[in-house]
Length: 333
Image 1 (cartoon, rainbow, N blue to C red):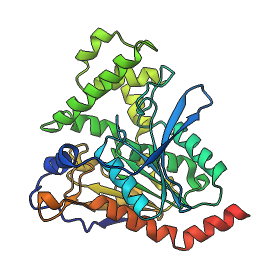
Image 2: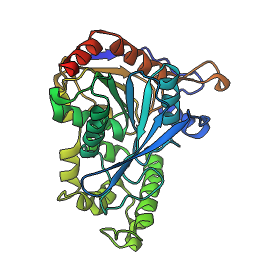
Image 3: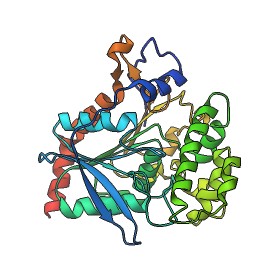
Image 4: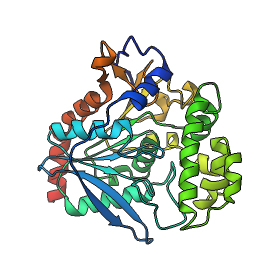
């Protein structure tokens, strides 16, 4: 079901780019005390998790976006909000994003759900009866929705939330080649190229390092680097198989998607329609909000990061409602 959001953008951030850039550039970075856990994977690589202090409450796993980390403006914000509300939260770093290069030549990508599955299973072995939710931002949202569709009823979650999702990867890549959105493409590709160079001393990249500066669009980079590293025949194969829109009607877990129609990372034509969704999925659309922006508030000195309150309101509804009771009962059986 598609519904209209109650988000009202700050009057002093009237456009999509201002909504997107303001928290990235000006939000103060703060997060609760965290404990690092390393999860060894079956293929010889590892995943790092940063956990808040355990307090006996429900567990919430957070997935960051492309080249994201604890330094991303939204990660510290949501971890702090979750902690304040009594939840036990963890930030899952995609391979190579936790401050240390991963061991294998491969990294992560927008459709890679195997590591999320490994973390899900790890948490469930340790906490089989505790209510569990997952929040995914941008690339992490695409990974989350694809995984939920793949798993269907087997996903042992109470609920899920996805924010600013690139539902159609080809459409998103082409949107980032247009207008001011090229600034985001340039910034993110710069981070990806640095990651490739950093790993070159451990694992040789699929292309010579001297060719990296010539990969100036996501389609070029993903065709030359991402696709061959992860077993795709090319960029079109990667985008086709990894886009989450095609998985939405298979989701069985109650899922909230928060999306702005003016997201500069995705054209409005790529947004899901009601025919893409089923009863488990609610797509909450806002005409404004940018990409992982959604900044409200009367003045820049009193910015209100609406996303965190909206996400926590949704979690509270499911953690204290019938769904949580059913999950605990099923785990006990």
